[in-house]
Image (cartoon, rainbow, N blue to C red):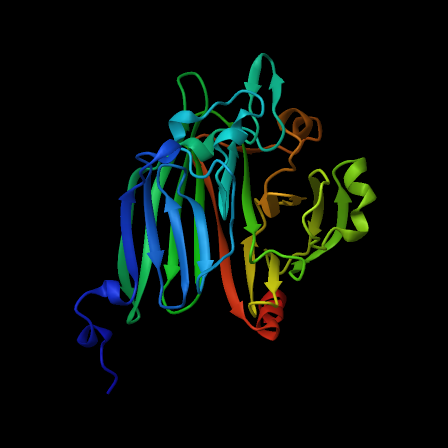
Length: 342
């Protein structure tokens, strides 16, 4: 007879540790965060006061995410003007961009839209971080809602649920974008997923399951043949590439494998709403990062996307929902199988 794990433990923290805390020091002062430590060897930190974004992701002690020089910045320091968003860009494994703009700042009809929008700097309402038991296994479930609303303006809500498995190195983000108002509203969203050192190094193998690559600008075009390569740190400026992702029953995939550590990470996402995929490379010294970014739009800003007729809309009192899964796979063969959806 299989015994319950409860017979072996005095506290479920022995198996899956879930702690919610307030950060201290500098610009991170008082930010509400939850830390999840799993039996699988995976750990992550969720910033409740920053759209429930993921500031750190580690596997068996190896850092996977990129952390910007400014680190965690409390939302009250947010400045929407131009590119000032960069001064509160934690990076981390995930920074959510939108809901009014993704990419370059722009202005339309006297309204200023800052770089990557405001959603990453909106704290979660009704935030909860719970450990549940499912099929005899513990799982961490973190939930919250981010309101991007104003009088006479948009009435948008982002409902987020993050489920973290305990014995499998896997987590899942389910987002629902809701128009709580009564008029049709535009929305844009992009998942700025950032890979950093030591998981990211010249030995890393980047795999993006796409059929076509387009360079964002002439500079990126010069290096297009090396789009999936990871170089040593250099003095080159950032580059962006747009990928036409392959469809696998409504899902698309991208991943990175690190042979030095013998594991890889695979992101699988539902692509009906997330129709565009941007790859960001910035390998300049001290800013060594690779971005894998599914989203509704490219990163040239709202005005450009409107000219392309690429902005999606939600009718009043309606919503759209989708899921992004992240798996860590031990060994190159298992990584390839996950990338191929076997």
